[in-house]
Image (cartoon, rainbow, N blue to C red; front, top):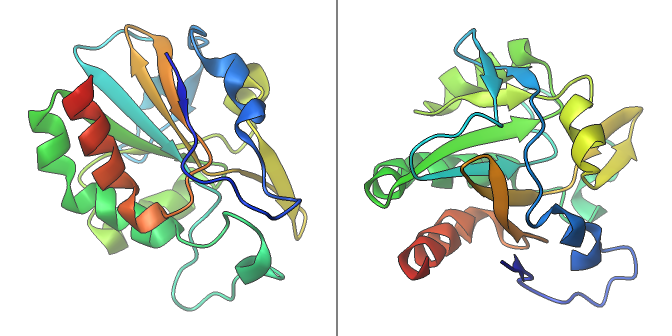
Length: 185
């Protein structure tokens, strides 16, 4: 059980893998989060195979400006390309025994619009009330009055976090990284 650290950055404010080391081996808390399919989704429920939960800060609709200094916040940019990459590789991920869900602190209403706009074949969960982020002590950051998740991915099996990808530095290629990891695990 390891944390995949894709890149050591020379940015002093870029998070390191120590922020997620505590997650390895942790049981998922029994928290039901609102899902874009209108149901509650409990990440603690054991499912066959791997559950890949990619956490991302936020997506913006095309007609909405990005938050203040979004392009200079390490790890902020790239949420839409990351979601689209998981969409494009969804069948391959399923063939390798993995299911995928997205997770952000945005409202379910916004996420439903995003899922429809991007044609995502999987659900996206809302941790708008920061229940899961608090229970797992996930790394977050603040911008324009919003508390957002730092980009990371949890590989869960039998309700236990077995692997953490953090930081995710090239979001548009992250689904490929997951596919390679699944081949090795």
